[in-house]
Length: 272
Image 1 (spheres, rainbow, N blue to C red):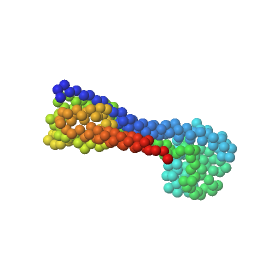
Image 2: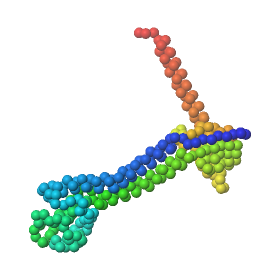
Image 3: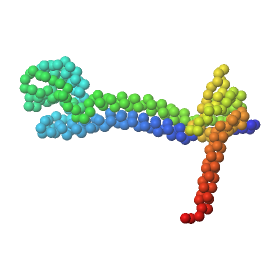
Image 4: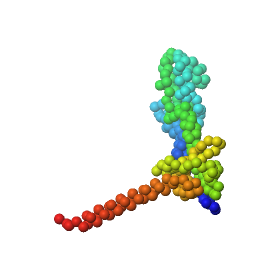
């Protein structure tokens, strides 16, 4: 084995899987951020501008640029829980006066929707149904940022896995193998076994007084077959990978020969 030198970079499969998953989570997270910053507020504004011009309600008497972020559904639900009985109590608990009063009804209007407090009498019965959203509430907009943060966690995880995958390097020299910075001397290698036809095999080696396992995978490292063959030659291990492929090739050849013999036999039969 003198002069042995084998170097391998990463296989494409593992990196592509991590790239796809990173793009999925990060892409969905960015979409949520877009909705929270632009999409939902923009739709709220478009719906509000349309309905503020409705001659049956506001009739252009309320302008978008005079509206703030309150009240919102959550603000109104807190007021409803206190069961106010007068308009003065509603205003006190909302902390604001009506944006406009139309036909005896008080309207508290914001950039996410409005509350309508109806009735000619001072005695009121209020409920959550008095709230009308333009499109999305402040809480629903904030949820988009929560969703973005949730997506960021697996997204960043798969980015790190992608970086690890594309920077993988394996080197074998006369003394042993360096796998992703981990040095394993030939003298410490115990066995190479448990090959799985999906494309991996386990290298068992001694380190720190115990036996460890390193999985070699053809989806992670490019020159998988050559690495296995080099280790087997250096250590005298049985090459389960080569044996499997040779068996597969033999079976394919036998099947092809059987088909050829059958075709030849059929060709030699007299036609009826």
